[in-house]
Structures are given as C-alpha cells and as structure tokens.
Amino acid sequence: MRTRRYRAERAEKRLLSFRACPDCVHDFVTGEGERSCNYGACPYLPEELEVHCPTCWYNFYTREGRPECSDPPSCGFARQEAPPRVAAVTRWLSEQSR
Image (cartoon, rainbow, N blue to C red; front, side, top):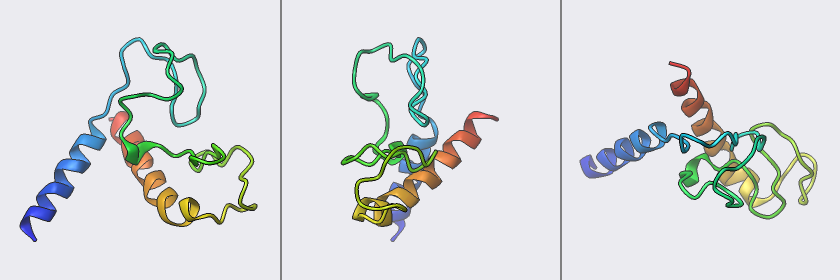
C-alpha cells in the first residue's frame, strides 16, 4: 500500500514538473504555435498530459475538433482516459502559473 502511494506521488511530481523545451512555442494543450522539434507531438510530453483522442485528434481540454464516435464524444477514450487527463492538465496549468 505504501509503495503504491509512493509511486503515485512520484508520478504526480514528474507530471507537474514537466516543462516544454526552452525554444518550443507550441502549446500542446491547445495545439497552437510552431513546433521547434519537427515532431508531430512533443516526444517528452507525459502521456497523462496528452488530451487529444488518438483516433480522431479531438481535444478534450479545449473541446475542439470533430469527434468520430459521436457528439458529445462517447468512445472508450472519452469515458476512461480523457477525464483524468483533462484534470491532470488543469493541475499542471495551475502549477505553471505559480
């Protein structure tokens, strides 16, 4: 039990300490701005902060895009993965403004 809590705390600390590369102006949350590394997505971005659907690229944080499953989105990603990821991005963004 203690080990699981320690792992969760380490994962949360790693997630909240994520910083984009210094010369990157791409906002991975909104999808706006130039990517300086020429990757389709940030290779250093923790999975917990990726708020785009892997199938249709719908952004669950900004609610922009066209979900393929339905409107509102109802796929497995929308039900299981998106809510904790949006919460993680919200925590991360609040940590950045401190």
